[in-house]
Image (tube, rainbow, N blue to C red; front, top):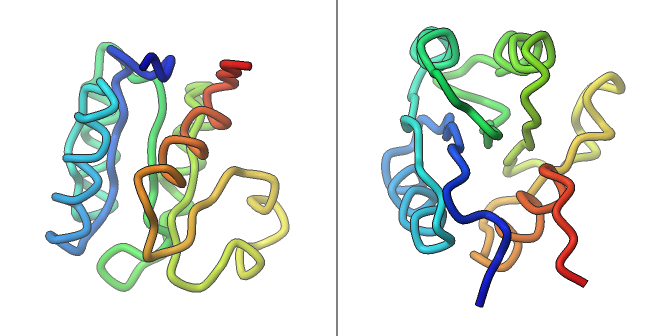
Length: 125
């Protein structure tokens, strides 16, 4: 089954190692190439700067006790689509970030796939 995600380079920003491993496995099962995972804001910004190809990013809203909005801003500046993951719900995002796709923890592979397809504007209908 094609997902439209095959070969897409996706940055994962997640500080919880088990969640990061789960996301990495899910994305690889979908055919994505995982960049990272980055466990800090600085590491994520370095990966963005160094990436020759980056199709999308999945950002945990809170990484190591800090919000990831500097990463989101860097992605917007580079026109790289992204989505958030959060344990608190997308309704808790500041107004400027509320229109972005978001998944709530704990999430399923189906939810991650659908949100990533939405982030990338992929429609398989």
